[in-house]
Image 1 (tube, helix red, strand yellow):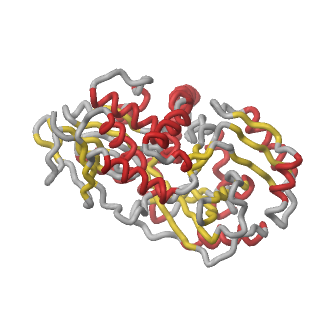
Image 2 (tube, one colour; image 1 turned 90 degrees about the vertical axis):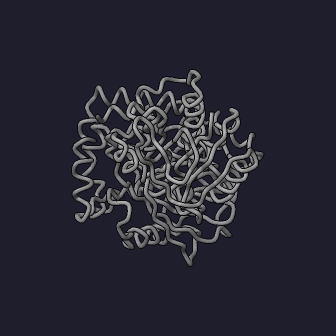
Length: 406
C-alpha cells in the first residue's frame, strides 16, 4: 500500500506517525506549527492518569457558579463566543447524565490504565527516557476547610491506577518552603508523572519520526472528498489520519462528520527556574485552580478553562491573574514572564475521537483529547496503528467513535 498522510504534528500526530513507521508503514506528516505553539507544547506537562472522571458530569455542572472567572475561578464563558459555547454546553449537559457519565468513565479508565506503560515504551523507543518522570504530583490548599473537603473528594474519587495519600511531614515542610502563605493541607499522588521538557519532547519525537523515514511537510493541510475516499491536495497518500487538534472539527465536518468541538483555551506564564527545586513534582494549588510545573530550564504556572473560538484574541486578564497568584503565594518564581495561550481540543462528552470513518474508506481520526492529549498520546498511537493496519486494537475504540455525535 502507499503512504499514510497524518494531518497535524502535535504529540498525538507525531506519536501516531512513529507507531505506524515502526509497523512498517510509509508516513508523511503535514503540519503548519513550525514554531511549536500548539497546546501539545504549552501544557502543564502532567501525565494525568488520575483523571478518570470526564468533566462532563453533574458535579461539574453544580459547581459552575463558584468556578466562574468573574468570581475568582478558572472557568470563563466569553460573551463574544456565546455562539460556540452555548450549543457545546447543551451537549455537555446531555453527556453529564448519570448513564452517559458512567460509560465515559469506563472508557477513560481503560485508556488511562495503559497510558503510563505506553509512555515508558515510547520514550525508550525514541532514545529519550529522561523525558519521563514518574514521581507523582502534589495537591495543596491554603484554607483548612478547602483542604478537608478537597482531600475527602480525592479520596472518594475514581483515580484509576493512581494512588493518593496524605502528604508526609517532609512533604509539607518542602511545600511550605515554597510559599509565604500557610499550607493548610496537602496530598501526594503516586502513579502519575510528568514530561521534563516539552520542547525537548517535540524535538525528540520529530527527530525519531524523520530517522525512521517519515516526511514532514510544513504547511496547513486541507482534506477533500473524492468519491468514497479522502485526499489531501498536494500530498501523495492513499490513507489519511486527522490528528489536527482543535482544527480537526472543521476538517471532519467538511468531510461529512459531526464533530461538535470547542476551543477550550488555557493560559500559562513561564519564568526562570533558578529558584524552584529541580526535582519537585508538579504542584496543584487547588484553591487557586493553578498547577506549577518545573521544566528543565523554566518554571510554569498554568490555569483556566476558557470556552471560546480558536482565533479569538487572548484575554490578558488571565495572565495577570496567574502572575498575581504567584505573587500572593510568595512563590520563588520571578519575572520577566513569558505568556502563552493555547486551545485544548474538546468534545462535549470529554472523550476523544479515535477510529475509522464510515463516510470515507480511507479516512481515520484521533483528536479531541481535551486535557489529556499529552497523557493519552502514546496509547492513542498504539490504537491508531492497529486500526490503520487492520489488526485488533488493545482495547475497544467503540466508545470513541465520532459517529456518537451523528
